[in-house]
Amino acid sequence: LEDAVTVRALSDPPGARELGAVEASGEGSLDAVVEAFVEQVRGLGGNVARIDSVTPVVETRMRQVSQAMPCFGMRFQAGCSQSYLTPEEVPVVRLVGRALRVDAP
Image 1: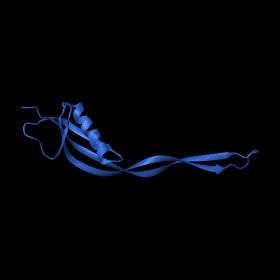
Image 2: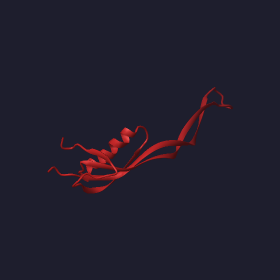
Image 3: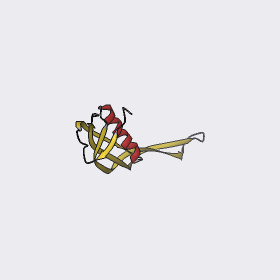
Image 4: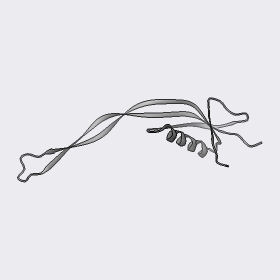
């Protein structure tokens, strides 16, 4: 497989050339974040992904909430809604590392 990428942690294989820094983060599964990391390595022409750090982070994001409520003072019965923003804590995983290239002997 020409575009196969090997994932390593903290060390480089013999003869590896460093191509650049890579960082990926996201919500959800660690597998999805690792796949995004590998895609970045592949995009730089790498065939080895070195992960230097895995950091769980909690980000605060604003989420819009809508709430239904009755309307008063209207001639016909109608429904009204109220929207507001509320903070929400979201767990995120961040990977930092390097794209490497090892040429076949």
